[in-house]
Structure formats: structure tokens, C-alpha cells
Amino acid sequence: MTTQPTLNDVLANSSLIVTCGPGGVGKTTTAAALAIAAARMGRRVVVVTVDPARRLADALGLDMESRAHEPHQVSEATDGTGSLSALMLDAETTFDRLITERAGDPERAAAVLANPVYRSLAGSLGGAQEYMAIERLHQLHSSGAYDLVVIDTPPSRHAIDLLEAPDRLVTFLSHPIYRV
Image 1 (cartoon, rainbow, N blue to C red):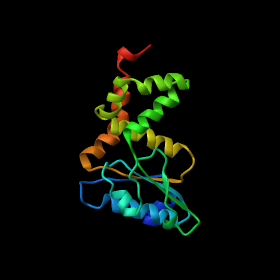
Image 2: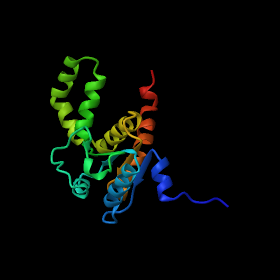
Image 3: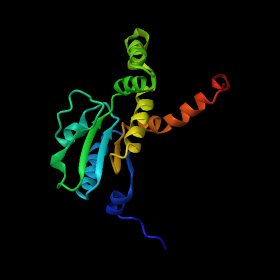
Image 4: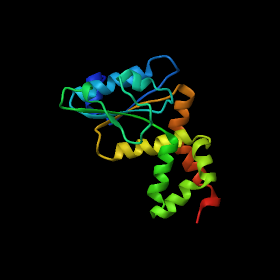
């Protein structure tokens, strides 16, 4: 007979926790509570919301009116041994940063970022929120800056889109037209 891990075991040993479900069931509150608990256990935690609503900022008592690409430190939530940061993902900002990092030089990046076609696509590309969320979550997870990433997903259908985004991208890029 195997024993189920306790919540403390999960918080102490996980590197990624995802809260999913329909709207109004407490995903954001749960994500914030789990992140605070893990930080109080001494973990370096970032809680990330993919939901465009500002409920995470409200739950943590943060003023996150302007979406930033870097997580905000939430010092009041820990006892000093761990750390807690929060981030509201913004697809357009993540897309801009991805272009800047991959462009090769600042002039090329500036030209792409100033292009009206790019500006239109970056703000309205179908599924961009999900793809850029996965990109940013990968960056946060692999940076080594955090022991635990807690993800507050949007309501169910959008959460499924988020979790399926990498597979859809691989399928798209695996098409023979993209093979060299």
C-alpha cells in the first residue's frame, strides 16, 4: 500500500504546481495560498497568473497595474527564509522580449519591434497568450532563480489551451513545409 504525499510534501518537493478549474472555484486563492505556504517553508517561489483578470494581485495585496515582464517581490508573505514573487503574464511583452533576445542585434530587434505588422500580430495573434505563457514559464522554471513555480490558470477551456500549446506548436513546426 502506498501512502499519498501530504500537502507539505508536495510543497517541499515540487518544482511546478498548476491550479486548474472552471471560473469562480478559487484557483487564484489556492495558487496564492500554496505559494505563500511554500515560501514560508523556505522555498524560493514565483506565482504566475495567466488569467488576464487581476485577481492574483488582489489576493496578494499587490499594486500590479502595469504588467511587467519581471516578477514583483512579495516580502510580507514570508518569514525571511524563503521568498515569494508574483507575475501577471502579458503575451505582448513576452513576445517583444523573445524577439529582442532572438534577433541577433539591437538594430534588427528595433526594426522588427517597430514594424506595424509585427505590432498588430503581437497584440492579437490567436493563441499568443498561451504560447507566450509557456515560453515565459519555461524561462522562469529553467532560470534557477526559483525552487517552485505556481501557475494560476485561466478558466478551464483556456487552461487546456495553455497546457496543449507546446504540442500544437511542435505539430505545426513538424510539418514538411518547415523542414530544411
